[in-house]
Image (cartoon, rainbow, N blue to C red; front, side):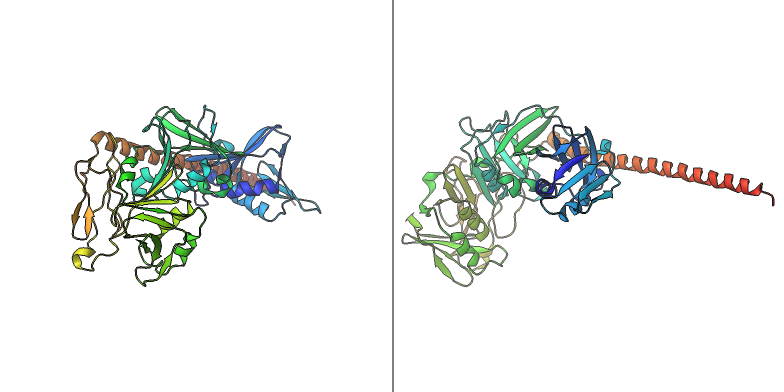
Amino acid sequence: MITLSVSSLKPALAGFAKIVSAKATLECLRCVRVDATPESVSITVTDLEMFASVGFPGAQSNTIESFLLPLDRLQSMARRLPANAFLYLEPDKISCDLGSGRVSENIDAPKVEEFPVEPVFEINTVPMPESFSRRFTEAMGCSSTDSTRYILNGIYLDSSSDSTSHYMVGTDGMHLFSANSFTLPLSESMTIPNHKILMWRGLADLPWALAGQTKSESTLARITAGDWTLTMKTIEGNYPNWRQVIPKAEQHRTTVTLPEEHEFAKILNGLPGGESKDKPVDLVVENGSVSVKDPAGGSSVTLAGAKANGTDVTIRVNREYLTKAFAFGLTSIGIIDAISPLHFTCEGRQMVVMPLRVANEIATPAAETPPAPIEPQPTTNQTAPIEPQPERETTMPATNGHTNGAMPQVNGATRSTTLPETEKPSLEVAIEKLDAFKVTFRETLAGLTELTSLLKQSVRDQKAGEKEVHQVRQTLRSLQSVRI
């Protein structure tokens, strides 16, 4: 029997809910695996892509065993109990004390052998700086959720493109965040999927330790935080060349400096016009002052304490991106012109935001035509797909001056840089199709395992039914032999 305090179990259950889906096809994926020895107790969950395990140092166990329990039944029992209560876990049974006596609930759970096998991780994690988890959360907030651009659905830990500095990067093609000021304990770069448990405050507020492992042509990442251990598959593929979209400091014609303490994010949230499609807002730099303006209604608010140097400019951006940069504490803004990316920076962190259309353009049919979509040019052997973005917005262009052979050309009120598309080699297309087949095969195999279990249960039920019928026949024969 395992004894767990409800106060230690409830936070863990909140984290488990970020991984376990109530709609999972396999019953074992809707369960937690309890592992117990007299010295330690841990609970593990998985969605096949990530394994999350949490230890309970204060738990007591008088046995050595592993078993499964449905997460929803565990949640239901813990929800009804006060924090100072205790739960008693056994195979197929959950019990609790209510003061007047012990209440037990019998549970029909799958066998522990049906739970997926956790990958073996042989490398110890290395502690990261205290700010690492916070920066990771910020980068994840800028990553993509578009399933057609899967390589962007994660945080790129870049340990190879610059020998002097390591970076984490998150982008959705419209804005990009990167941070350094740390050394990654990785032999090669990897992309960690933006799983929602990594955004959970229960982990984000803890110091992290990190490790990566490449074995048998598969790459795994492991994060430890407090009593939590997360082991996950990385996203395979080549991340786009994110460095080429970073504007150079010498290109900035206007520089805005923000105070360290401000409430500009609240000002933006209160400005009218946030319900429109692109949530546009004008950032206006004029005569050394900085203000934000609602382009539809004309409402304008001066950002007190913000100072500007250089050319006056009005640039229109999505207010969500601007709010995010303010909330991240990025205090310097570099602006090239009204149609080039904004460059936010502060102490090893930076964020690049693509503007919307030119703020002061004349409303003519030609001016309403949005610029052509632009993608970062992939590095050697990188084949991230180039895809169109939402109307009236552009993806991040290369802004390396004359390094690419030509400056962007002005055409009326808009400007765009067209980079040649790179077709994927047939070998990489074949590899991607093979990866997709592997996922489908795993799901099929899991389904066959469940089907086998159901068939075995059906055979057992049939045998039990035949036995009952045989007993009834024996009883009838004995009754027929009775003479009165």
